[in-house]
Image (cartoon, rainbow over all chains, first blue to last red; front, side):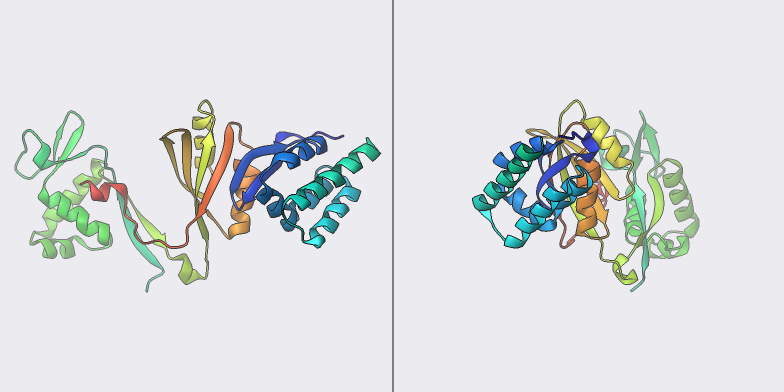
Amino acid sequence: MKKVSKDKAFYFFTSIGNYTGEKAHSLEEFLEKVKGIDIKSLEFHLYRGDFEKWIREVLGIKELAEKMDEIQKLNLKGETLRTLIYETGSKFLKEYS
Amino acid sequence: MSIFYYKFYILPAKVINSRQAESVTDGSMKIKNGKIFLDDLDRKILEILRDNAKLTYTEIGKRLGVAHSTIYERIKRLEENGIIKKYTTIVDADRLGFKPTVAIVTVYTDPKESENIAKKLAKKRNVLEVLISLSEELLIIARVVAENQEKLHSFIANYVAPLPGVLRIRTSIITKKVKELDSASSII
């Protein structure tokens, strides 16, 4: 899968301006980070539409971006949300890589 | 309430009170080993200008009971010696209908990259102040202004976080300013 440069990487924040120090340059790396990142970061980015936007505009994966949009509409929180994001991304990786 | 008010900046590092000087001349500014010594009249003039830099020499003179020509000479000397760095204008953004978001952004850095990060931040127009602190970790503290919270986040996410050597970032959005004074004011 596509690997992007540092300036196009996904930077994980927990709230406005609070950067965790974690970043991802590819979908594989993104999913690895999703497994361990502070849950507040997943909630912050998902509900701002940041995951959908990065996956669509930077990685260029429209199908997965749409799935992120669907997850956003479920209004999930906590570990259930983490599991769903991770499993959705992993399933996509298995199918298309 | 005026949209503008004037502020002037003074240079603290070189200034020493006359009380601290080994020997002081009769009221004129004394320079010894690159250090400038102020007398009471200089300090009183600075105090008045700090409050309102637009006052005339005559008005300052009246307040201090001194001839305006004396005030003129003193201010000229304070300017020429770099004690008064500049006169500037503070714009009241509220009066112009702007509600900017101001934040204190603390950037935790790799020590090898901290100077570079500070320089890059300092080049940005929306970064008002950049400070380096060595506490338990090396930190860069920046005062940043943005049109709104979203633009603040975008600046931090797209410009600050990708800078080489940035380890993590903490941001505190300012909700109320209780006091503001330039650093020299409290020590002269």
